[in-house]
Length: 261
Ligand SMILES: Nc1ncnc2c1ncn2[C@@H]1O[C@H](COP(=O)(O)OP(=O)(O)O)[C@@H](O)[C@H]1O
Ligand SMILES: [Mg+2]
Image 1 (cartoon, rainbow, N blue to C red):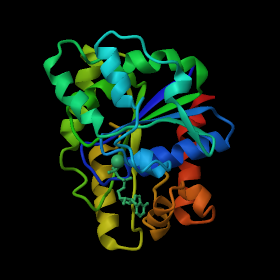
Image 2: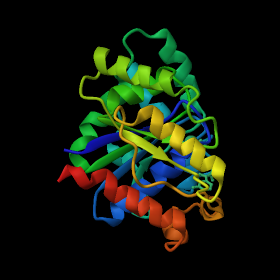
Image 3: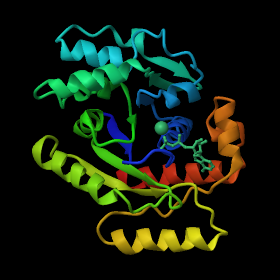
Image 4: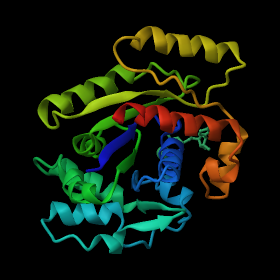
């Protein structure tokens, strides 16, 4: 049975999408069967996987969510799961924001995404959910569907701000909706290790969470190779295998699954 990871944070621009993409890439390089789910109406992950004009797409995660909410039968997985570079994925589009609005009006609609992903667990070793930066209904649905949360933090972006709110939300969902939910850990992204500021901010995160939440030993360095790889719709591991970010994401992938045996 596959494990479901949500990649989350209450902030944007902290490397969630980049982490989802590269984790998916390296997991499949290890021979694992991976499904990446774009659960952000901005559809950045979908774009990273080569689909830029998402407006016309049918069978996105938004369409599946809508069907699930209306108790309609979902299409067969082969109709909505696409594949790029060995990574299976479910695309998103702006339509997901319509779902977001509708979810707010529904009662007990926290388990819609879970309802879509549960039957897919048996086909995959890992399902990764890329989320949007909010604590709204979509994030709650992702937390209700996940086993573990990877929290990405960009130390440059006032890393601590909003973090406690995010952790509180995770704990609330664990108590009320999804008792198996755990925090896998905090991944520091876009670290400029040469700068003093980054060092200070990283220490701040460590001081605050040491002993409370795992902080992954691997840190993702800040490098232009990431932006370049996204421009070419590729995981950085594929675009530039020897780049520092690629090496770091490979190490992170091994660190993440090391304890699973
Ligand atoms: N390690 C990195 N080094 C340099 N730029 C990065 C790195 N990781 C992400 N970026 C860039 O930062 C921006 C935000 O990253 P993204 O993964 O989209 O964050 P989020 O999904 O949290 O909004 C993107 O333009 C991406 O290219
Ligand atoms: Mg994103």
